[in-house]
Image (tube, rainbow, N blue to C red; front, side, top):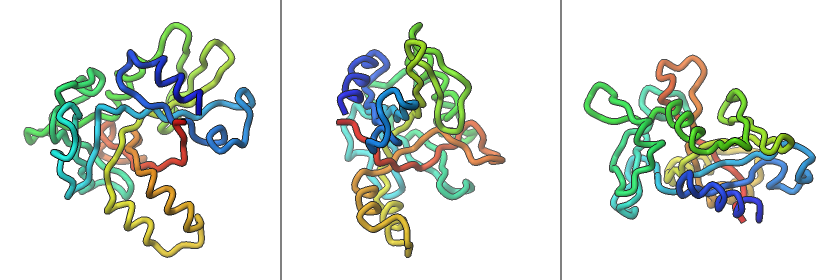
Length: 209
């Protein structure tokens, strides 16, 4: 969508980001100002990978995190720094914390706070977070729901999900979801002991063009 391209260019100072319009706007079910706009903000200088994926498959400037799902609830994980890229984004660098074993974890809470400090200008007012999203209002009358996310290379996880027996969604939707790939969003499982450092696997039918 043109809106996604314009937003990506406008917020370029926040880093190399891609805006994906999701929800009813992406599906063409509502007009521009009929309701709020659901937007996933994907930071392109960070990649997350599952076990078995080689970090060297990605350009050296990319920062790579490996997901760690042991002792976490289904669909959630923690992110361990695998390789720091040559172009480290400040919002990511300032959200790293020690896990007590010499490894660096990416704090979901700190990342969101750092990212929003860069993202919001005097023309945008943000409200209290609701789940993965941060509701905001642009130019007084344009409501948006922003979700921060990283691309997640997890073909094994997606393949297992696609292979599950199901009546819904239909197979063509399942194949499309797999082809679009997965993301990780800063959402913790309610009651988790790993609060503030947990991430949730997310897939979307959003569009960037």
